[in-house]
Image 1 (cartoon, rainbow, N blue to C red):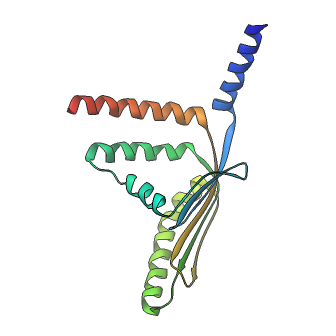
Image 2: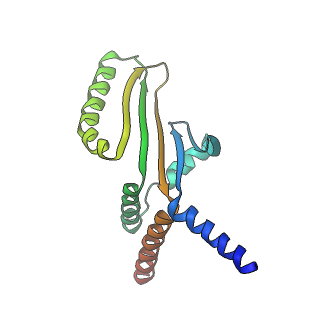
Length: 166
């Protein structure tokens, strides 16, 4: 009977890792980062901790930059339900505002062809506001097991590279 429960437990873990597609919702702005799982906030960071978190994401050397490029390739394993980008800009200088709007529209036109392949519902909007901010809202799903296996392979490759360089 114990083997039966162990087998069911292992089968449940394999199901969660490789068959179940986990859905997350992320809200990112210049001031905060929030991650929701089943509409429950599981990760929230803002203020000075958020700025330190952003600084840690900047690569320090070439090996770390290459590792970040390899890790960014994992985004092809993520399936986006929707991606909403709202840019809010203060209109204190109208010429600067028009220049920003046109620049962002050009960038949006360049990447929209690529995004349509990976995102089911994409929306980009620029609005005037009293405070400058960029708000990104995304909902996506992925298989945890496949991401973890690829992450393990990338980390193992760069662990070997770091030990040979020392």
